[in-house]
Image (tube, rainbow, N blue to C red; front, side):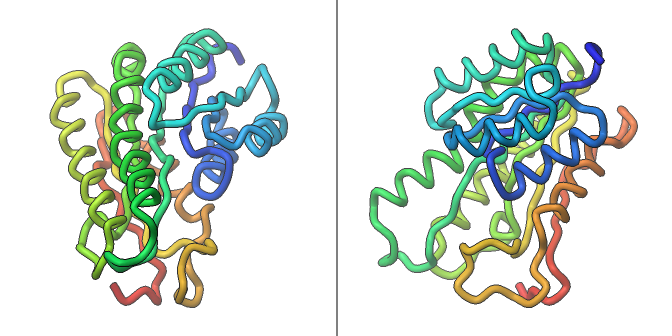
Amino acid sequence: MADDPVFLITGASSGIGAATARHAAGAGYRLVLAARSTDKLSALAEELGADERAIAVTCDVTDFAQQEAMVQAALDAFGRIDVAFANAGFGAARGFLKETPEHWREMVLTNVLGCAFTIRATIAALKDSTGHLLLTSSVAGRRALQGSLYSATKHAVTAMAESARQELNDSGVRVTSIEPGMVDTPFFDSPVSNALEPDDIARAVMYAVQQPPHVDVNEILIRPVSQPL
């Protein structure tokens, strides 16, 4: 339907982003799917209904002009943005002698500046729709992890969510920080048994956005039962 709400997701081509897109589509949202991986993104948009229900927008979140273009594409296609999910990000091995300085730079820019750029790019549209802003942080954004610059970036995202909540407090826009523990991806050297699946996080996202308008779920910290930290 032309008046169905619109859900924008960065980092939408795989993992939590793609799972959330599928759950949101099932809940009746039209989708704006953004990522750098154009082929995966286009296939997902096609799966979820193509141009009338889902559009794919190639976007490097570290480039603010591309984020502005992403928002404009959403408004041109659907006329509104009801939910913006700043989900793009990636990790690094623990240890301050691990990874390359270039990997660190790209991670910090993506996880921190990219998230801030998404807030900046979507805030006017979210105010217009009295919408919902979500940010992907991590359990690593709630407690420091040994040798983890990634943890520092996610602490920044957790703080950013609260800063945005305070700024948007009188606008009606809701703000949620999603803080997953270990999710079943190739990233972890020693994953726990029965790690979370992307669908587990997607359900948490949908729980937050489907609350009544006066309910603002600010943080969801979700771990697998067997995760010790």
